[in-house]
Image (cartoon, rainbow, N blue to C red):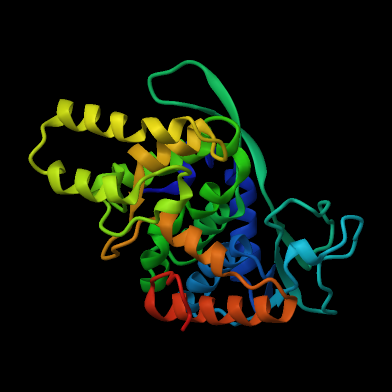
Amino acid sequence: MHDLLQTSFLSPLKEDIVKASQFISNGPLVLAASADLEGLLALGFLEAALLDAGISYSRRFLQPMKHVPRDEQNIVPKYNGTKIVFIDSFGKTDDTNSENVLIVKPKEVEVQFPHSEQKKRGTVDVVIQSSALASMISPTGTKTTSFRPYVGAGQWLMEGLDTTIDPIHTLVRDFLRDEGTIKVVPLPEISQPNVDMIPGLSERRLKKLRTLWTDMNANQRSQALSEFCLPSLATEGISTARFEELVWKRMVLPNQEKDLASILHLLQSEWPETKDEALLFASRLLDSWLRTGHLFESTD
């Protein structure tokens, strides 16, 4: 695996990540996050690394962030004399000066694409940061390595792609593709895509296109897929940036029939509404992910 800290999207945060990895490595500690998919993903990377490294820790899922009042100030749990790592997926907390508390939250960076002099600003989500921490704590650990294909999952869930092109998503997707961790393929090459992410898409026409796909050359594929997407372009409910990703650049994980976007979409649709059910669902899902290395779309 390549070094995440050498990438343009994480190198600006290198000093903070190194300090955070030292804090975590000197366990024992408590890992805490809200019972949301974003928090679970980040927590998973840290737990995988701590298990690989044999560092003692305990986990605490808190109520989902949608149940927390907007003006709530004290969302970081307190444990006297115990070090805490709190995953603040939505950037709700202020920085703390406490020597016993580490807060991992989204951070803005300025990045530059290869072969371009133009710089863009973007926000690095907590999952990417946690994956970098995991790779420092346990660079070659079995669980840490198996989680690598999910590095871009949190960035996909962020709102950046709902308005415009998210430079961080693009960079992390291409990074994982170039190191061979994932494949990036168009929609017809996904064996079990979740089609309801794209309003107006015809599953029947998609099946027909998939049967013809292997016999088409590159130009024919481009034209056929463009024509297939035309009806969906006239519908509302999805940004152009996210639409293009779902049609042309699906992220495929090793040994899985569903692409990453489909897996995340299904998990979000299945996520319980009530606090207690969400806490149990998140805990069971994370246990399963740590045990199998696969983020299943159901815990049944």
